[in-house]
Length: 590
Image (cartoon, rainbow, N blue to C red):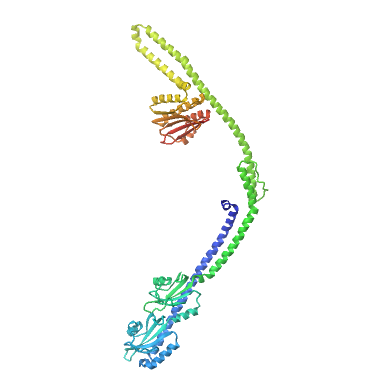
């Protein structure tokens, strides 16, 4: 899977996809802009219809007002001729389906005329239009209400009938059915799934299209159009989900400005219908781009194999052989003027150059190895010569200087014994001083012989020599020393013992000079077939990287220890850090 994802074919297909992405982005961007435009157009269309309904309502109200003014002037109404009035009002209601009822009520609440006459007194307490007509003595509009008989919403209007003295003697009224809105909606030819709602300021549905039986009389506070109306109290547009779960573009506007308690008309057009042209265009463009991408992908897949992958596979195979060490490999691809031809040519030239340089490197490495072997042999001989010279000097000091000093001490003792008491008294202080100087000289010679070649190293081995040297080191410096180790059986070669002893000496000398330590620990042993000598202190430590920079900060002690270790085939390693002490490891395998 990872090979496919990181393969050249996948990269070519990815490149094609990236090249098509701007076009896809442009299509989506254009579709989004068109969608915004179509949504705005849908909202404006819905708002236009809502405003049309409000305008029609105002026109009907004005027509109703003119009709009531005319009816209020009729003699039969002013004279309260119930028989003629009933006939006239009944005929008018029968001729006009917009009006649900038409009548006249006396000031005391008695209905003396009506399209649907009744004999019982009317309770005028809830007749808002009646109260307003009496109070304002002018055209009055009542509240929208839902008839308990028909279940339909209607709006009542009233106009006062004045006597010759100017008193209100009765009120002519008419009931306007909201069914006219359904007719207007039908003529408007709204898109399928559209809704038409009339609500009051409390959120109660007064009329609903297409199916008002389930909604009229209900309060829908969670409806998006109801929430928008209650929040804004003016006309506007929103996009939301209706009670049936269908997303719609809603527009709303007040239906009649003179009604006590505002009533709003809201029209909702399904978003799917409003955005259908844009969605179809987007689907078409995406399908077209998908086809182009498919064809481009196939072209990249097969064309890449023919024009690129076959040559690149040869180049990859040659590269793998080259990385495995076969410097004689060549691509075998004919040279060409293109980038791939230049690449294969450069690869072959590089392989040829690497092969040539590898031969030169091997020759140089062989020469360096011979030189290193000669240097190691020379270092070994120098170490042997140094130790031989030390041994010779020690022998010379012991055999000649030591014997001469011993003879001089004996002669001095004889001379002191031959002096008279009087002469001895005169020369006593000088003789004693000469004896002291002679003893100090003999002790200095013995110390020099020990430093040049400790006899305990030759007689008892490396462990004993280190233990003896640490005791003397502790007495001389005051540092606490710890030794942990046993003698090897069989003993190490004399040259190895001598080199390890000299390395320990140099390391302990560096502790005294630089470490400012309180304790030194020396261990000697055999760990997993490897001879190891360790010198560790608890001093101030140092940065080994700085110590290794010989040109800027030469550390001759470390250089000497490494050369001694190299001479006997050992590896010397130093671990240290500021404030963490220093540990010198000397390891020899085999």
